[in-house]
Amino acid sequence: MNTPTTTVDWNAYAEKYDMLLTYNPFYQEALKEVLSRVQNWNIKAGDQIADVGAGTGNYSVEVAKLFPQATVLHIDADQGMNTIAAKKASELENFQVLGKSVDKVHFAANSLQGLLCINAIYTFPNPQEELQNMYRWLAPGSSIVLIDAGRIMNVSSWTLALTWRLLRKYGLRTTLNVLGEAKAVSQQNAYIRKNQQNGTFWTHSHEEFCEAVTTAGFQIEFAETCFRGDCDLIIARK
Ligand SMILES: C[S@@+](CC[C@H](N)C(=O)[O-])C[C@H]1O[C@@H](n2cnc3c(N)ncnc32)[C@H](O)[C@@H]1O
Image (cartoon, rainbow, N blue to C red):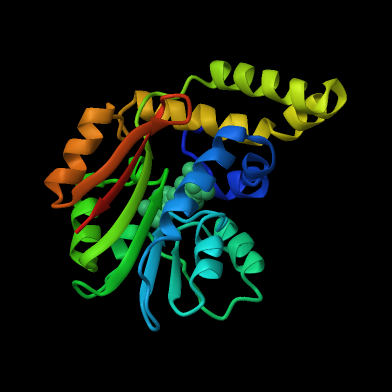
Protein backbone atom coordinates (compact mmCIF):
# COMPACT_ATOMS: atom_id res chain seq x y z
CA MET A 1 0.00 0.00 0.00
CA ASN A 2 1.29 3.48 -0.82
CA THR A 3 1.88 5.76 2.14
CA PRO A 4 -0.56 8.68 1.93
CA THR A 5 1.29 11.88 1.12
CA THR A 6 0.56 15.48 1.87
CA THR A 7 3.49 16.73 -0.15
CA VAL A 8 2.38 18.97 -2.99
CA ASP A 9 3.30 17.29 -6.29
CA TRP A 10 3.95 20.29 -8.54
CA ASN A 11 4.66 17.91 -11.41
CA ALA A 12 1.19 16.35 -11.20
CA TYR A 13 -0.25 19.86 -10.83
CA ALA A 14 1.63 21.03 -13.94
CA GLU A 15 -0.38 18.84 -16.31
CA LYS A 16 -3.65 20.48 -15.34
CA TYR A 17 -2.35 23.83 -14.10
CA ASP A 18 -3.37 25.81 -17.15
CA MET A 19 -7.02 24.96 -16.58
CA LEU A 20 -6.71 27.86 -14.14
CA LEU A 21 -5.81 30.13 -17.02
CA THR A 22 -8.64 28.83 -19.19
CA TYR A 23 -11.43 28.55 -16.62
CA ASN A 24 -10.61 30.43 -13.39
CA PRO A 25 -11.78 34.06 -13.70
CA PHE A 26 -9.84 35.04 -10.55
CA TYR A 27 -6.59 33.73 -12.07
CA GLN A 28 -7.36 35.54 -15.35
CA GLU A 29 -8.11 38.77 -13.45
CA ALA A 30 -4.84 38.63 -11.49
CA LEU A 31 -2.80 37.96 -14.64
CA LYS A 32 -4.45 40.90 -16.42
CA GLU A 33 -3.86 43.21 -13.46
CA VAL A 34 -0.19 42.24 -13.15
CA LEU A 35 0.53 42.60 -16.88
CA SER A 36 -1.20 45.98 -17.04
CA ARG A 37 1.21 47.21 -14.36
CA VAL A 38 4.34 45.48 -15.66
CA GLN A 39 3.87 46.93 -19.15
CA ASN A 40 4.70 50.39 -17.75
CA TRP A 41 8.12 49.29 -16.50
CA ASN A 42 11.05 51.14 -18.00
CA ILE A 43 13.02 48.23 -19.44
CA LYS A 44 16.07 48.88 -21.59
CA ALA A 45 17.96 46.73 -24.10
CA GLY A 46 20.00 44.07 -22.27
CA ASP A 47 18.01 44.30 -19.02
CA GLN A 48 17.08 41.15 -17.08
CA ILE A 49 13.72 40.34 -15.52
CA ALA A 50 13.19 37.25 -13.34
CA ASP A 51 9.99 35.39 -12.52
CA VAL A 52 10.58 33.26 -9.40
CA GLY A 53 8.35 30.19 -9.00
CA ALA A 54 7.18 30.85 -12.54
CA GLY A 55 5.18 27.65 -13.04
CA THR A 56 3.92 26.99 -16.54
CA GLY A 57 5.02 30.44 -17.70
CA ASN A 58 1.67 32.21 -17.82
CA TYR A 59 3.33 35.36 -16.49
CA SER A 60 6.95 34.93 -17.61
CA VAL A 61 6.09 34.19 -21.25
CA GLU A 62 3.81 37.24 -21.49
CA VAL A 63 6.49 39.43 -19.88
CA ALA A 64 9.03 38.16 -22.43
CA LYS A 65 6.62 39.16 -25.21
CA LEU A 66 6.15 42.62 -23.65
CA PHE A 67 9.91 43.26 -23.50
CA PRO A 68 11.72 41.63 -26.46
CA GLN A 69 14.73 43.89 -25.71
CA ALA A 70 15.27 42.20 -22.32
CA THR A 71 15.94 38.65 -21.14
CA VAL A 72 13.30 36.97 -19.01
CA LEU A 73 14.60 34.37 -16.56
CA HIS A 74 11.93 31.81 -15.76
CA ILE A 75 12.88 30.15 -12.45
CA ASP A 76 11.08 27.08 -11.17
CA ALA A 77 12.14 23.93 -9.33
CA ASP A 78 9.65 21.66 -11.09
CA GLN A 79 10.56 20.06 -14.39
CA GLY A 80 6.95 19.44 -15.44
CA MET A 81 6.11 23.13 -15.01
CA ASN A 82 9.29 24.17 -16.85
CA THR A 83 8.66 21.84 -19.81
CA ILE A 84 5.25 23.39 -20.39
CA ALA A 85 6.68 26.92 -20.06
CA ALA A 86 9.52 26.18 -22.49
CA LYS A 87 7.02 24.88 -25.04
CA LYS A 88 4.99 28.11 -24.79
CA ALA A 89 8.15 30.16 -25.24
CA SER A 90 9.60 28.11 -28.10
CA GLU A 91 9.37 31.09 -30.49
CA LEU A 92 10.94 33.55 -28.03
CA GLU A 93 14.66 34.23 -28.10
CA ASN A 94 14.68 36.29 -24.90
CA PHE A 95 13.38 33.54 -22.58
CA GLN A 96 15.58 31.35 -20.38
CA VAL A 97 14.46 28.59 -18.05
CA LEU A 98 16.43 28.08 -14.83
CA GLY A 99 15.27 24.74 -13.44
CA LYS A 100 16.41 25.28 -9.87
CA SER A 101 15.05 25.70 -6.41
CA VAL A 102 15.00 29.37 -5.41
CA ASP A 103 17.56 28.78 -2.64
CA LYS A 104 20.05 27.53 -5.25
CA VAL A 105 19.70 30.64 -7.42
CA HIS A 106 22.43 33.28 -7.28
CA PHE A 107 22.41 36.64 -9.02
CA ALA A 108 24.79 39.52 -8.52
CA ALA A 109 23.48 42.37 -6.38
CA ASN A 110 21.55 45.03 -8.37
CA SER A 111 21.58 42.87 -11.54
CA LEU A 112 17.82 42.56 -12.25
CA GLN A 113 15.61 45.34 -13.62
CA GLY A 114 12.32 43.64 -12.78
CA LEU A 115 11.05 40.81 -10.61
CA LEU A 116 7.85 38.81 -10.32
CA CYS A 117 6.95 36.18 -7.77
CA ILE A 118 3.36 35.01 -8.09
CA ASN A 119 1.84 32.63 -5.56
CA ALA A 120 5.13 30.93 -4.83
CA ILE A 121 6.70 32.63 -1.78
CA TYR A 122 4.36 30.88 0.66
CA THR A 123 5.73 27.52 -0.52
CA PHE A 124 9.40 28.46 -0.02
CA PRO A 125 11.21 27.10 3.06
CA ASN A 126 12.50 30.58 4.05
CA PRO A 127 10.11 33.20 2.67
CA GLN A 128 11.69 36.18 4.46
CA GLU A 129 15.18 35.17 3.35
CA GLU A 130 14.01 34.86 -0.26
CA LEU A 131 12.38 38.30 -0.10
CA GLN A 132 15.71 39.66 1.11
CA ASN A 133 17.56 37.91 -1.74
CA MET A 134 15.11 39.39 -4.25
CA TYR A 135 15.72 42.83 -2.79
CA ARG A 136 19.48 42.33 -3.16
CA TRP A 137 19.19 41.13 -6.79
CA LEU A 138 16.98 44.03 -7.87
CA ALA A 139 18.62 47.22 -9.19
CA PRO A 140 17.82 50.42 -7.25
CA GLY A 141 14.67 52.05 -8.63
CA SER A 142 13.42 48.80 -10.22
CA SER A 143 10.07 47.17 -9.46
CA ILE A 144 8.81 43.90 -8.07
CA VAL A 145 5.32 42.48 -8.33
CA LEU A 146 4.28 39.95 -5.74
CA ILE A 147 1.15 37.89 -5.24
CA ASP A 148 1.06 35.48 -2.35
CA ALA A 149 -1.53 33.08 -0.97
CA GLY A 150 -1.57 33.91 2.73
CA ARG A 151 -4.82 32.51 4.04
CA ILE A 152 -5.59 28.81 4.49
CA MET A 153 -7.27 27.63 1.32
CA ASN A 154 -10.90 26.61 1.67
CA VAL A 155 -11.08 24.06 -1.15
CA SER A 156 -14.87 23.50 -0.91
CA SER A 157 -15.62 27.20 -0.96
CA TRP A 158 -13.36 27.62 -4.02
CA THR A 159 -15.02 24.68 -5.79
CA LEU A 160 -18.46 26.19 -5.13
CA ALA A 161 -17.44 29.66 -6.30
CA LEU A 162 -15.90 28.30 -9.50
CA THR A 163 -18.78 25.90 -10.19
CA TRP A 164 -21.23 28.76 -9.98
CA ARG A 165 -19.21 30.89 -12.40
CA LEU A 166 -18.65 27.99 -14.81
CA LEU A 167 -22.36 27.15 -14.84
CA ARG A 168 -23.29 30.72 -15.68
CA LYS A 169 -20.70 31.00 -18.45
CA TYR A 170 -20.58 27.52 -20.02
CA GLY A 171 -23.68 25.57 -18.91
CA LEU A 172 -23.97 22.21 -17.17
CA ARG A 173 -22.21 19.86 -19.58
CA THR A 174 -18.96 21.86 -19.86
CA THR A 175 -19.01 22.57 -16.11
CA LEU A 176 -19.18 18.84 -15.31
CA ASN A 177 -16.38 18.11 -17.80
CA VAL A 178 -14.17 20.85 -16.37
CA LEU A 179 -14.78 19.73 -12.77
CA GLY A 180 -13.91 16.15 -13.75
CA GLU A 181 -10.72 17.27 -15.47
CA ALA A 182 -9.81 19.54 -12.57
CA LYS A 183 -9.70 16.76 -9.96
CA ALA A 184 -5.88 16.79 -9.98
CA VAL A 185 -5.94 20.53 -9.27
CA SER A 186 -8.36 20.08 -6.35
CA GLN A 187 -6.19 17.26 -4.99
CA GLN A 188 -3.05 19.43 -5.04
CA ASN A 189 -5.00 22.32 -3.52
CA ALA A 190 -6.07 19.99 -0.70
CA TYR A 191 -2.36 19.18 -0.12
CA ILE A 192 -1.54 22.90 -0.16
CA ARG A 193 -4.22 23.38 2.52
CA LYS A 194 -2.71 20.57 4.65
CA ASN A 195 0.77 22.11 4.31
CA GLN A 196 -0.65 25.49 5.33
CA GLN A 197 -2.37 23.91 8.33
CA ASN A 198 0.72 22.02 9.51
CA GLY A 199 2.95 25.10 9.11
CA THR A 200 5.09 23.77 6.23
CA PHE A 201 3.75 26.59 4.05
CA TRP A 202 3.72 30.18 5.26
CA THR A 203 0.35 31.70 6.08
CA HIS A 204 -0.03 35.41 6.70
CA SER A 205 -2.53 38.24 6.92
CA HIS A 206 -2.40 41.08 4.39
CA GLU A 207 -0.70 43.28 7.00
CA GLU A 208 1.90 40.62 7.82
CA PHE A 209 2.77 40.22 4.14
CA CYS A 210 3.14 43.99 3.71
CA GLU A 211 5.39 44.04 6.78
CA ALA A 212 7.57 41.20 5.44
CA VAL A 213 8.01 43.03 2.13
CA THR A 214 8.88 46.29 3.90
CA THR A 215 11.28 44.50 6.27
CA ALA A 216 13.12 43.10 3.23
CA GLY A 217 13.76 46.72 2.24
CA PHE A 218 11.13 47.39 -0.47
CA GLN A 219 8.97 50.49 -0.68
CA ILE A 220 5.39 49.44 -1.28
CA GLU A 221 3.59 51.48 -3.96
CA PHE A 222 0.36 49.52 -4.15
CA ALA A 223 -1.18 46.75 -2.05
CA GLU A 224 -4.53 44.99 -2.12
CA THR A 225 -6.02 41.55 -1.58
CA CYS A 226 -7.03 39.36 -4.53
CA PHE A 227 -8.28 35.83 -5.24
CA ARG A 228 -11.41 36.36 -3.12
CA GLY A 229 -9.36 37.80 -0.26
CA ASP A 230 -7.07 34.75 0.06
CA CYS A 231 -4.00 36.34 -1.58
CA ASP A 232 -2.10 39.61 -1.41
CA LEU A 233 -0.93 41.66 -4.36
CA ILE A 234 1.94 44.09 -3.82
CA ILE A 235 3.72 46.35 -6.26
CA ALA A 236 6.95 47.63 -4.73
CA ARG A 237 10.21 49.30 -5.63
CA LYS A 238 13.80 49.08 -4.40
C1 LIG B 1 1.08 27.94 -7.36
S1 LIG B 1 2.41 27.76 -8.50
C2 LIG B 1 2.51 29.39 -9.20
C3 LIG B 1 3.04 29.39 -10.62
C4 LIG B 1 3.03 30.73 -11.35
N1 LIG B 1 3.75 31.75 -10.65
C5 LIG B 1 1.61 31.19 -11.63
O1 LIG B 1 1.09 32.03 -10.87
O2 LIG B 1 1.02 30.71 -12.59
C6 LIG B 1 3.86 27.71 -7.44
C7 LIG B 1 5.13 27.39 -8.20
O3 LIG B 1 6.24 27.52 -7.31
C8 LIG B 1 7.19 26.51 -7.67
N2 LIG B 1 8.06 26.27 -6.51
C9 LIG B 1 7.74 25.72 -5.32
N3 LIG B 1 8.82 25.67 -4.53
C10 LIG B 1 9.86 26.20 -5.23
C11 LIG B 1 11.22 26.44 -4.95
N4 LIG B 1 11.75 26.10 -3.76
N5 LIG B 1 12.00 27.01 -5.91
C12 LIG B 1 11.47 27.36 -7.11
N6 LIG B 1 10.17 27.14 -7.44
C13 LIG B 1 9.37 26.58 -6.51
C14 LIG B 1 6.32 25.30 -8.02
O4 LIG B 1 7.05 24.35 -8.79
C15 LIG B 1 5.19 25.95 -8.77
O5 LIG B 1 5.43 26.00 -10.14
